[in-house]
Length: 394
Image 1 (cartoon, rainbow, N blue to C red):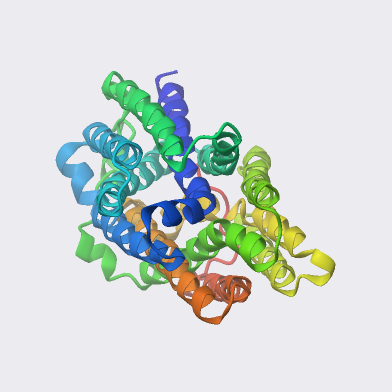
Image 2: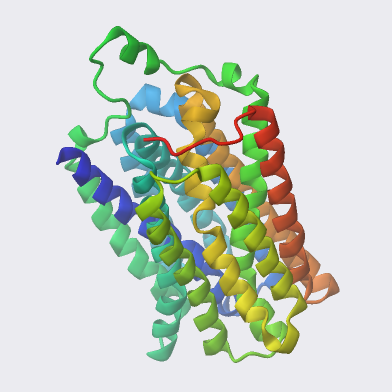
């Protein structure tokens, strides 16, 4: 029961985490106009967020060992709340830069901390549903923006509403300190040994960790680039009305979420390697359809990508312990989260520059290239681990 309470709180935290990623892409044209900066200035925010996210995520293992998971999560959520509140209350370009750095510090802690907690204490099903909650948040983001627009509200309103939600989560974390233990109780010498954690440099000597982090770099770069730039591609590049474009971006995140929920039902019963391979191939096919856009079917390609991507990230997290060993898992999950943050922010930034320089169709072409690199890194990872049929863990 105590563990279930922690899982439910983790789910709520991930809904809040995903809401920003689903929201930013659809409000950015309005934000950039009112802040007096060009569209490609999103790249500046991406770089600032990258520094904050990676600074915390990469060092998650040592920080948790020093402060404990409860304190680590509480500080992370408070930072995220302060960042969103600053967006809403002080809408200027300089404040937005500071606010996104603060919120990114919090995001790095929330993402890595909750993944470590459920990878160590939960199941593959729970990890999939945790990341389905990210999709729920990302799905709500575009619809929240559309709702605020429909009632005449400005972009600041969206971040103010999320800040209120985050403040409530910080209260929940504050009063549940006993729930947040990373390692199971040590009933035996063998269990106690499995709860030992390697130092950062020990983990960084493992080739499998470098390949895993590179895979996360390309995967998150693909997922976020499709989610954040497809609105611009559809509305500014292909002339789709703004509300319709927001709707289809919402559908992308929505089908992404449904896929994670459905896969969570079977995650403990299937061969995860086969599922991830099929998902990566299907996602690449969707990216090609998005770029090709025959008879306007690029939208269908985006939706196909959303469904195919659903099991990839949580499945890779769920198999981290099996891939690198229990003593390296805490560091590895932090590294993977950091690499995903680097991939997501740098790729969205780079794609923005390419779109401005060479046209909005470069968004779709870039997503195709990222999808193919992701699949390539997955196949290399299988060769490195020599475990062609890694199953679900938990």
